[in-house]
Amino acid sequence: MIFGNVKDLEDYNFLPEEIKRCFAYAKDHDLIGYEKGSHTIDGDDLFVNIVEYETTARENRFWEAHRNYLDLHLMLRGKEQIDLNFIDNMEQKEFVEKDDFLPLEGPENAHVVLTDKDFLICYPKDGHRTAIAAGDPVVIKKAIFKIKIK
Image (tube, rainbow, N blue to C red; front, side, top):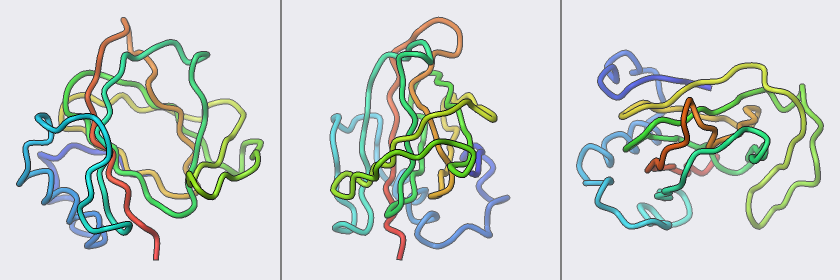
């Protein structure tokens, strides 16, 4: 898991080129103007999902992890808490290959709060529970870049 803000990207020169490519794409495209849904960047290797939803109480949300893609969450508008834990600390359910979805159960180990231009990179061992209200529920808009693990 890596948590930061795009204003500090020069501090993240160690990131793989595929992840840097996502930040360059975000800089060159008006993602806030994108409609909700999936937008192809490089076939199945790299795409961005634009989501917009109202944050809610943690008990209304679910845990997930992914095996085939890294997630790069980039907050475009709003404030959202994301709970985190390593999948090895959690009960792992049956992996859904077609959706690259590993359902999990267990407690949080930590959390981050994303606000405008904050990002969170989740690797396959990083369980995450999104859409949690950080205070009052708000409608957020976020880009989730999906980067194929090769």
